[in-house]
Length: 114
Length: 113
Image (cartoon, rainbow over all chains, first blue to last red; front, side, top):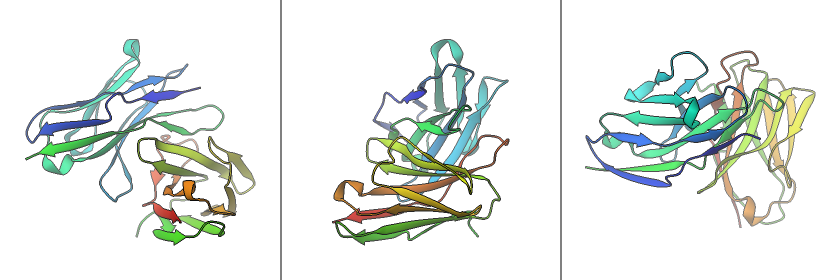
């Protein structure tokens, strides 16, 4: 069965600093990978997704993620964090067989220091 | 107007009460999902449906039931609510054969006292 691990429960960065959120997945076939963001009191918004092709994908709000098959990773990055990026971030892998469901990591909460 | 709507947005109820959470979508998607979110646990799948006649249990279906009244409507019921069902509940939709992206509603915050 597929699984997703987000090793960092909580990360604090200063505004303007760079950011990397880690995500490791377990899935037998080529994965479909997603990053979602949840702002306080809000629903989930898709930041970016990877299906195939270029392993560096660009998303909204200046985020990017790199798929590394050899490391089973799909880390999210942003070169300069803004205070409005404070939120919880979820990595997810899609199972194309059977349930066609998303399996989510437990999330990483990002705090931004002004 | 929002593509995926959930009602109510907030609900407080008592142990033993029957509760129904409703989800409607205007995206024309055939697949619909119910998740619950608990702090530190991420989102976990409760039930999913591929069409009106196709209902499937997810990871944590015990204590829940669902109804797909139409392609656009998918309801989640708690027959006898208990306190550990206090959580944030999300509905999501996905188009079969599309980009495999799921679109989420705004969530329903349920508190069981």
